[in-house]
Amino acid sequence: MRAARPAAAVALALACLAGGAGARQKPSDAPAAPLRQRISMIEQEVDAGYGGGVHVETGPHGGVQVSAWREHKVRVEARVELNAPTEADLDLLTKVVGILVDPSATDVEVTTRGPHDKKWMKGIKGVPKDLLRMPWRIDYVVWVPEYTAVAIEVNDGDALVDGVNGIISVVSAHGDVRLSNVAGATRATAAGGNIVITTHDRGWRDGNLSATAFGNVTLTAPSGFSAYLTASAPGGISITDAGVTHDLGDDCKQNVGAGGATVNFVAGGKVALSLGQQRLE
Image (cartoon, rainbow, N blue to C red; front, side, top):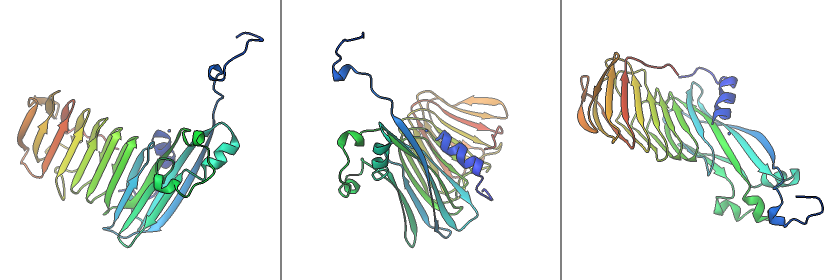
């Protein structure tokens, strides 16, 4: 768990998450004018206690990092990127694209507002349809108390959850998912990418773990990691412990170490467990 919110880490996370003369030309043949770009930051903080929930919905484009900290608050930092032909167009888009942070007694909802949200757009008038098709994205860094239930929905972007203990659900339609030193009943889905899981613990704490990926699923843990592994992967399943690799075929149900919480992996590529070679993140 992180003791403070390092500004450099936030900046890095947000940056990682964006003929002839006299001839008449048809308008469709003319080269498109370069788009202007505007990048802005939105920062909001709301009170939150331990054991609450946070739900983040990123919209059509954008990634999210959710990290634990020691404050009893939820802090949302959003990097908003807009593209349009003119400064006046960018000014109009700022009225269309944004975020909503909605706290309740038990949860905090973080929602992306934009042209994709039909309900939101009912209140937006006077914006040309061509402008609504301009490219834009919002990338998030969200800080939460350690004991928080987290639900993330990402359409086109990567997702990272770091240091959180709670019921965790991460769904990414097009992007990778990373889980770093989390605990609790956890379900991760990467419909168009890979899942990478790293833990300092020698077992999955406070619940079971389920990960399903279009690509590969990898778990890095200390030597002596114990769980009940169920896995399926056409590219093969392997466990590497202290440098020795054991191939388990493409479907397995067996104890790892002394057994324990169920770890269920389904991959379109490979499933790989690497024990005793943990990377610090």
